Image 1 (cartoon, rainbow, N blue to C red):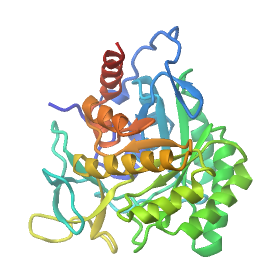
Image 2: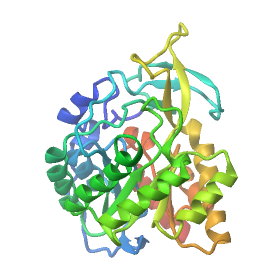
Image 3: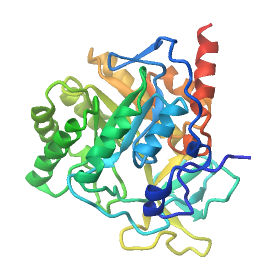
Length: 356
């Protein structure tokens, strides 16, 4: 039987933000001995493990502190903006029925998550909400203070607006994240839940401009780009060749988009533009593994050194091992970690066994 998830899908985003985390994440374990030296490195930073939780479920400093305390050594603070943005209406996280791999154009039946049962895959339909900077900046700084030696906080951010205004807002928000002290930044270029036809990461000219604008604000601070799944290998190759030496790493994948309906065939999520949702969990693992392998090949072919941060359907230590086998430098889990707060500890044990 699964443990209660630390982000409760039966509550609204606002209720989770104010009251969470839940389940065993609400109970911070006794501090473990800090005598052990970090055994791995992430972007040159010593870490106990290159495993963690990506942008999404760690809503604020309480969630981040709990994740660090449970051994998730790379924690991404949920994507922030330069101004407040409300969440999509409840519900946001539903279980979806998909036993195999999610394929393009597929329609999924969605229903409320069941207590005591961990779903294999879920919807992720929040729309990148954000507190205003006067709230999230001090809270991100508090999250940073909860990191112990060998743990890294990553500040995820996103620009708003259109055209040149969006480029400027990415740079502005990056500067706000730097002011919190976050040692690593992640620019989100791939949210599928904002009702837009094309994801930003597929617009190379604009992404190039965004990266250049961000670099002027953050200098040499490590910068990661969060990407979607690229079906077009040539487009991914072009992006990597253009940006692989400008950024420190690529995070992939975000989610895969699918139309979600209820048992009667009606849209499962209320509101305009929510007929489709980002899908997380086991059903998108194939896409995450494929992107990781593609990035690893491009890195080698172009003699580049960027890091590959992989996620998508990581539910077990075997999933972690599969990602590392195809080239991931770090691995993250959202859905798996939400229902299994011991996942990081299990993965660390398996990694140790593999070494010995």
